[in-house]
Length: 354
Image (cartoon, rainbow, N blue to C red; front, top):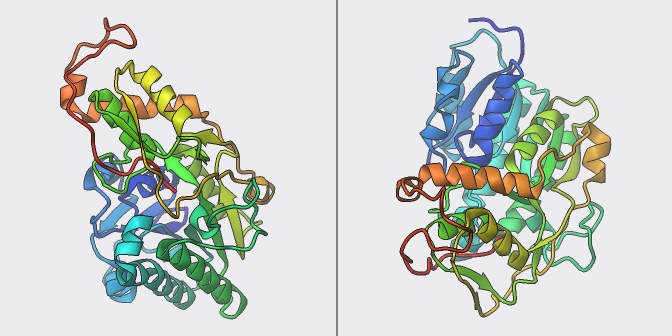
């Protein structure tokens, strides 16, 4: 089977962000191979993609050997020309609990991907890094020229992977780009995952009239960016002629929102009567975060098309559809502020994300 456009390998393509990236690639006419072990990703995230003849999913773990995984793939006549590397464990907390596993999965997988890219002569590798490499910012906004100071193994391994991409570009001649994601949110972010983002948790808790738990006074700020904008940015970067020189670029909204204000917006959107409860602050938590996105704007025209309010509304709608007990309620005649269901108790999960 021959296609006119390129074949793109997406690691972690069944995940929250990855599935949106895959959809964007397919919408633009490219062929996509996804490698995902489905430990965090979900097959249902790719339900529509699987109907497309230009899509192929391989259930496997990158760290088990990417050469072996792809050795028997001969479905298409065209070789893999670009790689978007999104696979990895995404929790700062989990990296502290098990730093060896974080090293194996995050840094180790990146090494496998880069060596494969070198061997096949890939046109570009785009790596999903994180704002966690900055650590506790002394000044805002976070600029790529600031010295990194990660606070946990997760950020350390993301930073180490960035150095590895730099090496493969300078020494091995592999075009690479690093994208530092800030707080990504949107449909398909599973609130049941204990390490999921604060927005997915707040929305699901609000829809079920559970308490919203905030660590500290709630004045800590984050740069929340909608997943659709991130997916478009990743694909634009991957195919841009102005990237591929091991650049490190921020992807965010470029705006700060406090966790307290976020909770209030979500309560208003859902019409929930959930309470906001404050717990003691957590040590090591970043206080403020905001991205300087000018470099990404300059390099490949990155910009956000979705406001926080619109993104929250879309995420509320999706989350409601995923909660049968909530979607089954007739809330169309319930005035904001009135309870639409019995309180199920507080969900003792992380309420903020870095």
